Amino acid sequence: MPLGMKNNIASINAINHLAKAQKEMSDSLTRLASGQRVNGGADAPAALVMSEGLRAQIAGVQQALQNTEFSLSMVQTAEGALVEVSNLLIEMRQLASTAANEGATDFGALISLQFQIRTAIEGIDRVSQFTRFGNKHLLDGSQGATGTGGNEELVFVNATSQTISSPLSGYDVDIDEMPLRASLIEDLDDDDASGLQITLEEEDGAIIRVRNPEGASALGFANRLQRAAFSANMNLDIRYDADDEELTIEHREYGFTKGFTITSSKDGILVDGPFEPQLFLGQDIEGTINDEPAEGDGLVLTGDFKNSKTSGLSVAYLGDGTGNAGAVTVAQNALKFQSGTSADEQIKVALNSTHSSVLGRGVDNTSGFENLSQIRLTSTQEAIDAIRLVDEALDQLTSMRGQLGSVQKHTLETNISVLRSSAENLTAAESSIRDTDMALEIANFTKNQIITETAAAAVAQANQTAARVLRLLFSNNAHNHWSFFGE
Image (cartoon, rainbow, N blue to C red):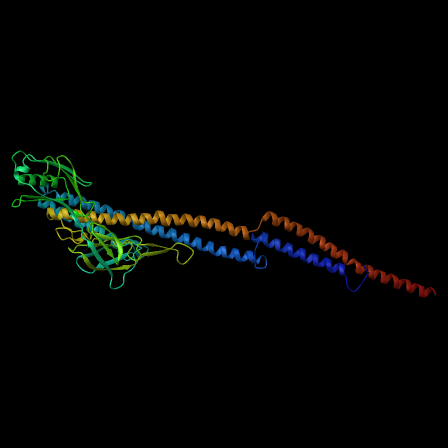
C-alpha cells in the first residue's frame, strides 16, 4: 500500500467499523433497557406487523374477559332475585293447598290465607320492580321479551333471547289439533256399582282405592270416589249423571302427560278387564307459529329452538276451534353482552318480567283467573285453581332459572375460561416475537463493547500513519537544511 497523506484509508475503515460497533452496542442497550427485541419498525418490519396485530388482539381479549366477568355478575344478581321469587311461590302454593282443604278450613281461616297470599304477591311484585344492577332494572321486563296476544283466546306466555321481534302485524298462530283432557266416561248403574272396588292413580301423583259396599248405589260410589280424590289433592274432576247413569272422571289439565290409571275389580265395569290397569291420557295442542314448527304442551305452543324467528316463543290457546287463532306480537329487548374481540361475538340474555300479572298465564280454570295477580282463596274451587296457576308460575320461573343457569355455566363461565387461555397463548406468541432474549443480548452487548474498544484503538493506530508521513517530511527538510549550511 502506498504511503499517502491526503486520504487515510486505514483510519476511515477503522472509523466505519467503530461506528458500526457503537450502533450495535447502542441497539443492545436499548433492547436490554426496554426488554423488547423489536422497538421500532427498523428493527424488524415483519415482526413489528405481527406483534402489533397480536397486541391488538390481546387487548381485545382482555377487555372481553372483563366484559364477560361483569356480565356474569349481572346474571348472578338476577338469578339470586329469582330464588326469592321461587320461595314466595312455594309459600303461596302451601297457602292455596291449605285453603283447598275445605273440611278443616273455615271462613275466618280463608280470610287470613287470602291476606297472606296477597302479601306474597306484593312481595313478588316488589322483587320485579326493584331488582337492579347499577341503574338497570333486571326483572321488570325491560331487559327481556314482551308480547301480547291479538285476542282473548290467544295469550302470550314467554319468549327467549333467541326470539326475534315480530312485525307490527305479529306472528300468525294456526291450530291443527285441539288439546284434550284425559277422561273416562262410562255407564255405571247400581248393579255395577254394588261391591265395586277401583284403584285410581294420577300420573306422577296420588293413588286412592275406593270400595263400594254390597248393595250401595252408583251415586254413593261416585260420592265416595269424589271425597277420596279431594282428600288426596288429586287434580281430577269426578261427576255422576244420575239420569243417564253415567260416571265421568276427567283430568283438570290438558295434555299428553296429564293422565290417570284405573284398575277395576269387575270385568267390563269402567275398564275392559278385572284388575288390569288401564291408562287414560290427554292430548297436547298441535299447530304452528308464523308457519314455523311448534311443540305442544297442553294448551301451550312453543316455537322449535331451530326456528329462525319464533325460537322459544310460547303462546297459549284458550279457544275451542282449529284454524287461524290470531296473531301474537313480540318485542325483543334482550341484554347483549360483548363477549369477544369481533363485533359479532355477542351473548344475548333475556330477563323476562316476574311481575304477578305476567306469571301464571295461559291456564284454563273455572274461576277465570288470567294470571297470578288475580288469584283468590275465598272458596275451595278458587284455591284449587290458584294451585294450578302457582304451579304454572313455578314452571315459568324454573324455566327462567334454568336458562340463566345454562347461560352462566355453559356460556359465560366457559367464555371466561376460553378467553383466559387465549390471552395466555396470545401473550406467549407476542412475547416470542417481540421480547428480548436477555442472555443472548448481554452476550451481544459484551461482544460489541469489546469490538468498540478494539475499533477505537485501531482508529488511533491508523491515525499514526499521517504522523509518520509528517515526521518523514520533517526529517527530510532538516537534512536539506544542514546540507545547505555545510556547503
